[in-house]
Image (cartoon, rainbow, N blue to C red; front, top):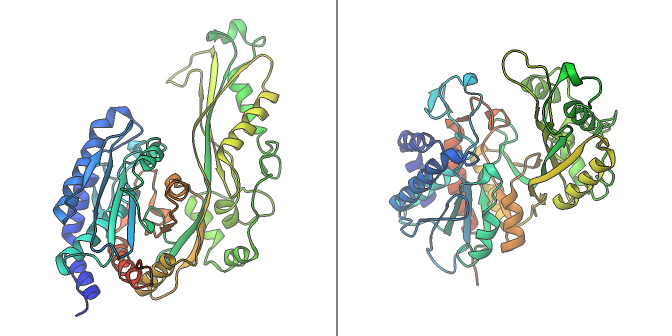
Length: 463
């Protein structure tokens, strides 16, 4: 029996225990964006350190930052072997609204072979596949066929504010040949894919202030400009009738799809009508001249993610609010720059803000868009691994989401990333009833094991 076969057999024989261990991790409400859960985020970091040590990663530790801890560790088998840096995040999104969950978000439940819990797919479940792959090698061969390092962060869902500085300070600790990340999705069930393109992001909060206090709408209504009305009008003006963004200069740096990418878009097994039904809308609304797939993965966007002001409690309160605020996210494509887009947006707003209002703009965070070389040795190893598991070649795809650390690894460490994920777009990440198919959990472990084996033999071994 070959080494890879032994490792895969070990994984198959221990799936139930692997799932029980994952459930223990999922029980920890490591919500990074809410300060009330700071201790729980640290608890999850400690849990991972202890688990890594139990697998033989004896140098595993949690390093404190200005935000939440970063868990690091590694196994050096041979300095001549290629080194893979595994990235994942152990923090999760808030679970609200709780009343829409079919089971408590931090009391994991298995229904029909599907694991329901906050973080089941994003990203604890996918991160954990890499840890279990380590165990499979350690228990069968004594070590993996490559050198492995881990960087597991606790701030991804709140902007990864501490991570770029951490990477800068720890370049030697994180030195590797490639980064592997499982925080993305298969293109469809049973249809493997490797992500080579990610949209970036500019995330802003804007506030309009009118009167210096809330006012009675009967006494003052009709003579006072309502900040909510003014903000709603500004947001509505950000798109034209063709759903193009109206901010001056917004599209100036957008890199068009290459002919090869356009062809790939047309051959991907994507059913726009099924997508609409799955999302639960009556029809898609997108930028004129582009398909649903192009619009949702490869074109820039602008969306209001939240809006508030005045009275929103039960019953009535006749008030003209002093302020109204909104959160605006813009997904960016190569070669747009997050800082430049933020500046263009503020200039656009200031030219249009009513004289009766004061405007405040705050940039919350940003991320660079990314395109990755699809012909590297690591990409070839990932392609072969997924072909082995799914009996078909993976598609190379661009996705609409952002993973800021991918750009950080490239700009700070000079490393490309292999985005080999096993979620599905229907896994309800960031939503109630987030879930992860246990079949994909097992497939992910096997694919990671096969990637290690293929990468060890691709000619990537250092001279």
